Image: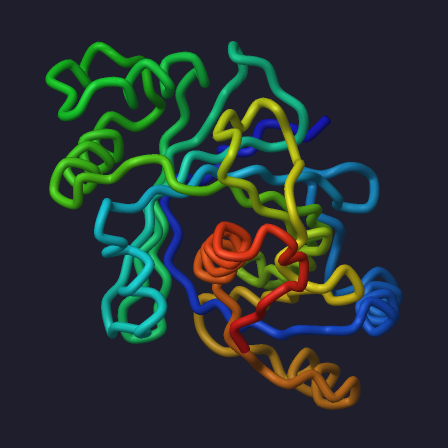
Length: 258
């Protein structure tokens, strides 16, 4: 069971993405776990692993999808996220993720999952102050974003993650996401990870998250392992697969944005 995930509610950083074969991910983990510069993420199990399930939102005319697909200079997303197994009475997290000039800003607030569902029934909600959240200001931003775009639940994305934090550089974080699945037929996130793989099961999405520049030792390591940067939108790729499956129910081949 993951520990309390909300020690920080506001993030600003660069996020560099890489797509790796599973065996290369295992090799990198072996190096990172023994190089005395990184430690396992304290929010996971004893080797920094946990599961993430996120409900993403979009408008009827797919504004969020096209902002991301077209790589607009400023783009943003809204999601409701849980970690590991939860019940309707467990904490959940509304997150606004914005990207501007390659800098990622994320703000989030926690509330009980049942309260999140109750809030989503009301469009617009006139009583957001009645919801007990960890950050009322962020909750107000969630409501403004949701009302402006007319956002509705769109797709659930789930994956397993193994994560590392820097020991000396506390802003450095490296995550490995695998077993990436999506569904749009059951939008209850407490039902856990279930759906269709939208990235080949032999591939892992690695993200290097830094506030400034990548440390020299890590840049050298990525070069030694021949890790090439790419661009993979979990949201867009999952939507693409869901739409392909509607047009052709036999579709099961992951379609990746690289």
